[in-house]
Image (cartoon, rainbow, N blue to C red; front, side, top):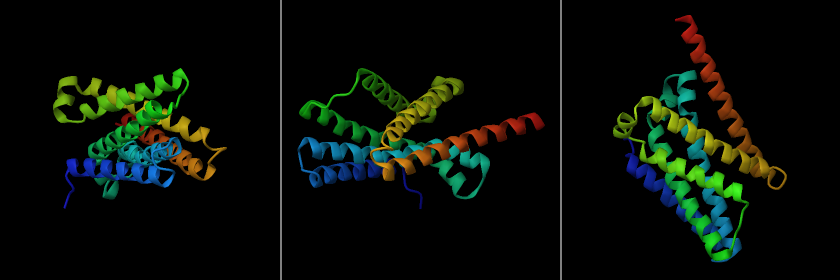
Length: 197
């Protein structure tokens, strides 16, 4: 039985919220350290949803059939689950900033804020009606730009953590590199097919 999109999205977000609250409590409760722990785990929980959605078309193009095609069919639901989870993460960020004075350089706010705008736009247009309204070319451009933007944010976040938390950061960076490799291989396969036609 196929899980409805609304159930997948709300279930993933509720688990993310529960994780965030549990880590907040485990690391000191409603304190700066506790909220930052909640912030960190919610970002980590959202990351695999993003990688799965971003890699789905590449996997299905390289190895059609089986779980790869099933993943591609559910890509919209997985992407929406990522968006919902990342907005849970944003809630923890807002608490950290507003209640505990967490600050970041201006460019971090601009890049991160821009990523949230893109995530919101992608989520709002993840339906057939929006795709028809925008037109396929503009819809693809929006989702491609947003996907790359979010990938760069995650890559920067995890690469910068390699010296501090290598056990966490190195596997995440490896997943990002793998996703990039799949994207390049799929593009090359498509080009070869186009030239052969």
